[in-house]
Image 1 (tube, one colour):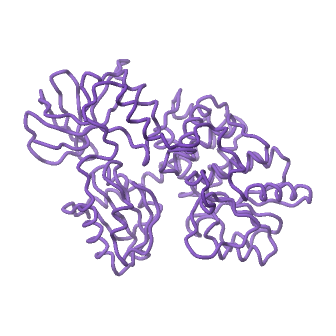
Image 2: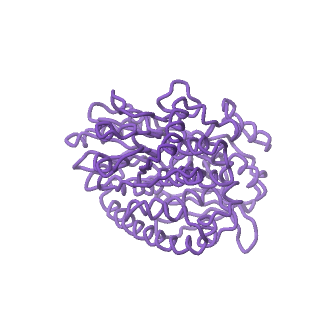
Image 3: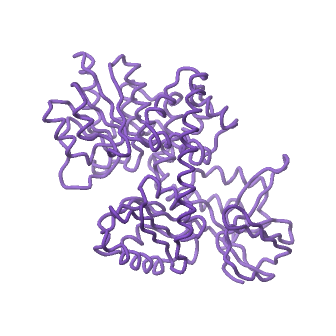
Length: 511
């Protein structure tokens, strides 16, 4: 399909959201989750009875942000509470040891608990009131015994399925405050949504877009500290996913998630800046570990198959980020698996098909998997990892796409100007169900090219007759002829104050 006007792009992108029923924040209501009112009533009762509430969080950005939002509402309602976070060595979310340490009262989980059957039974046996807020599907056959389970995934026909765990906590907080305070809550919620949700349509799209606006207008101490420390005047979606989320996540991976929670709850900018320094140190430490494992993986990779599968001493908390980096470099699916536990992470580069289709073709060697099109957590039988590698690679070859995910058509090169940036940004954020727009260029003459080595694997730069530049990162070692056809995305940037656009080549189709 040839694209000769901006209106054609607009029409194609708007079609992606044609079936969205939720189009504004005021369309996302606490009453949409049937069990939420029961939980709200019990929390109000705990205030009258002078009961202590224990909020239990996990160690990732989604849960930590959800805890910060919920605790702000509890504080505003003058409800006594304390917060406990799990650590990565003991398990995610509420566990039996955490329950043992609770002296009494009400326990509320945030972004965890649906599959914590043992811990829930222990809470029941100890006479604790357990309220679960979560966004995960039930993996077994038995629901945990709890006073209320606030989880849209368990409610048939709920329009809020797929929202983040923090969003569930935000709805509970909204009910406690008897209204939605977008300025004080959506700013943080945008970070949680972008950090944990793959499907950015419907409610998630609304929360992400409204939240980014709230974030850029926020005077919250931690947001001011991020603005200053990251030297950002206006946050972008990329800032949320690539710069802020790793800082919040690192605390729970390296030390304790409470450090990130305290940062989010800072009362003054000075306090937030001091706490940011600690979080930044955690992030640097985490990155050093990731970089070391990434370099080690490069020495072990067999790149001759349609997919890359590595097994070894891969810890789940490290394998996800390393797999993502490898997938971007080699432009193919990557799976890193712990040879001891069989637990692994699978990752695509964002334009290479659907992991769910690939994993669905695997046999009994794959015990379970959970995730979206581009990222998944899985478990493979430890003695059948090689068999899994063979079947997974066959599935990737079977479902290989001729056109990258997000492909719209052949764009008239005359439309490629720096002004196109604002038009494309109207449809952000891009994710699984709304992939970044991909275009095609047919039989383009190459005026010049050069290859530059960098810390990754190199970059091939093309210059075309009309002055448009393109780059092909980590290119295959081939001879490129004078005319090429390729798929690409658009990269907008500034050089010495001048607005420019670069074609980011995803795949060269012909030589």
